[in-house]
Length: 293
Image (cartoon, rainbow, N blue to C red; front, top):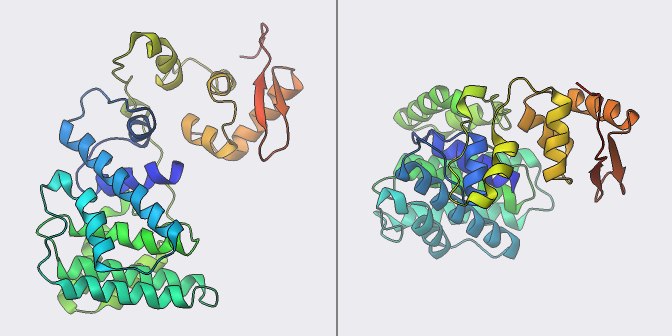
C-alpha cells in the first residue's frame, strides 16, 4: 500500500492538496483525518485512492483497455471535482489512449521498460493536451500513466511536488508546440524522483475520534524531537513488527544505511531480535529496561 499512498499524495499535491505523505497514509490506511486539513483535500485523496485501487484491479485482470474502463476510473477519481467521469467531450481521445496502451500490452514480453514508459508518458500527454473532461485532466493523465506502468510490472512514475513547476512548464510548452516528444523526454529524465523529506513541523498529531486508540496513535505518529533514532525504531517496531528498513527510514527521516546501522546496534545490545527470514519474517522488541539512548 506504500506505492498507493505515494501516488495519491503526490498527485493530489499537484492539485493543491497540503496533506503530507504521513497524513495521507493515516487517512488511507487507518481512516484518520489530520488537524487543519480541509474536507475537500481529504476527499480528493480518498477519491484518488478509490480510483487507483480500481486501476490496480484492472491491471491485475490484464484485460484490454476500453473507453468504458477509463470512464469508470474517471467516475471515481473526479468526484471531488464535481465532474461526471462518463461525460467526455471527445470519445476519440479515450479510444486513442486505449489503442496506445493495448499496442504495448500486446508486446509486453518483448518491449523494453523504456518503450513502456515512453508509451505511458505519451498517454499522459494525450489526455492533458486534449482535455476530454471539464476538469481534472492532469489527474486522469497521471492515473492512466501509472495504470499502464503497473500492468506491465514497472515501478510507477510519481511526479513530486518539488518538480511541479518544471512539470507544468514542460507540459505547456509541449502542448503549445504540439510536440509530445518534449514532454516525453522530460519525463524520461525524471522517471523515479525520490520523495522530498518531510519537515518535522509538517507532521501534526492526528485528530483521533476513538479515545481507545489515541495513546497508540500519538506514540506512533507524534514527532518527539528529544527521542533518539534507536528509541523511535523500537517504538515503531513494537507497533509494526513487520516494518521494512525502507519504511523505517521514511518514518524517521534518515537513510536506509543509517537504519541498518541502528538495527545492528540494537540487535547486538539484545534489545531487538529478528524472527524468521529477511523476507517474510518480523522483528521482536525485547521488553526490558535498555540503556540505549
